[in-house]
Length: 126
Image (cartoon, rainbow, N blue to C red; front, side):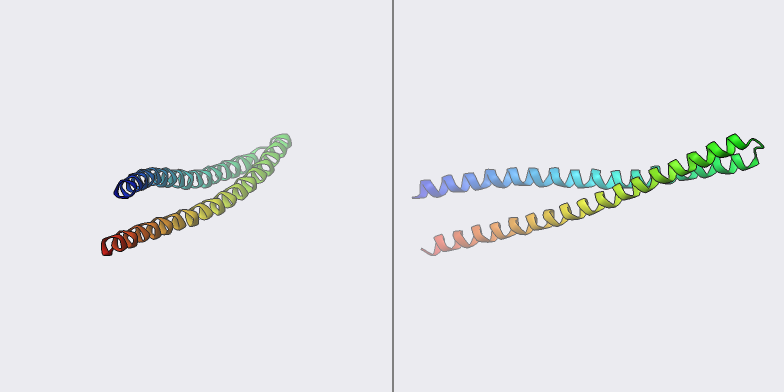
């Protein structure tokens, strides 16, 4: 019987080690995705400013063709910025879901630890 308990404890320990590694990997993924959302927002902001600068520059030009092209670029950048904003909000929602999953995993780990402690106490009382 003690041999089975020892084997069970070793398996549990190796599972906990693997779970800790996967938790660490999930943490790294969440951090990288959050970094990506900041980069997307920054990139969209830079593109918007560049588009506005081109539009302002074109207003000072006498050529109607330059103004037309600048307005077309501005429209295109606005569409692209809207697409990036949609992507960013979807990514934020996904990150939020992963964070909830991560917190639930932590609660599960804690419950497993408490269960193991209760089993140990029960075995000691026998």
